[in-house]
Image 1: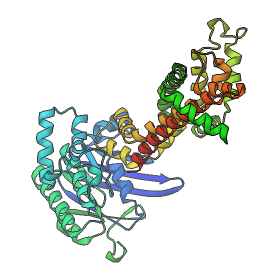
Image 2: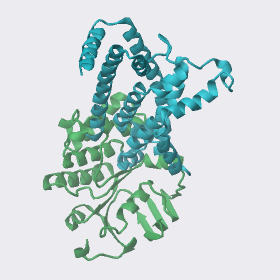
Image 3: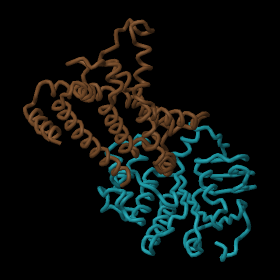
Image 4: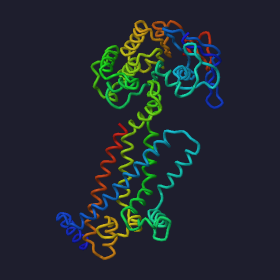
Length: 223
Length: 231
């Protein structure tokens, strides 16, 4: 198993927003995470992305227990990348944005250039390589954010509503890219969504989350 | 009215003639204000950054203290520094009183809270998603801090410019700690005060015009950088 979450809880103040007894995630699969607003989907992704620590419980990543110490987590974050629901791009060009994670990993300049070109091509943004990131549309921003995440060759990609507020064309581009990278690079993907058709198009497995708990299924009209 | 127009015209002629006394006073003002802004920035920007970026006990109290220090009158700072550097006081042996160094010390105390609080404001305005994005892409604490700093850079530059605008126009500290010695510690504002006392308005008006032009330029740059933070 890639991830095993055991008796995980997360609290904001006195309110429990996440309470998961057991969750297992297999390597190389695509998982959809469904649930109404406020069900704890983003919190769960933050925990899986090692950006937030659970209040209680254990997480095993590659069968190794995760200790929530900053230096340890930073190494894990090299393998797990999360894309926000409304991703933000750094000031500067698209090139600089995609280069960020590669520079951090100490990848040499020549290799960086090749990876950036390939990744932008993969998301259909190669014409925008020198474009100012803040001048891009919502769909273009989402695609560059995806390229920035894929450039670092993550083992796990966590996408928080990757197609929210996008037009049909951009939605299709994102969905196709996710499918493609899962098939070709065997990247494990977990995405949250409110659209059942995306689940049927992409996901191998589906988790339903309601009031912070995993439930067998959720009626479609409350998503 | 005649006095004003006559003084104004004579002042313009004085500036146009590049009068050595005017140039010397402007140079001292720019030098002293520039040095104090530099030192205040070197201390205030990291301080503001650490306060805004870090989470520690007493953070709110520290911000309240810095905000309170924004209201410190220049004469209070002058008195405070004087009590440390006058001949019979603890640092009297350093002979700092009535030197440019004394003015710089007082001005640093004046603008350090300005630089720090405006830096805190600039950092606090930065979207939380920048931190999260840098972290998820594998950045460590230092690299994440660099990202935040880079995104806030225009706001930080605006803080430094605002501080320079404050010191170039202050009079209390320069007068009390500099002593208004001609050619050494006479700044634009202290010279204007002296000329007014003497009833000589031409030099005072000339320096006033230069100060206003400088302030206008500073404000122009300040608004440029503030505008950049909003785009």
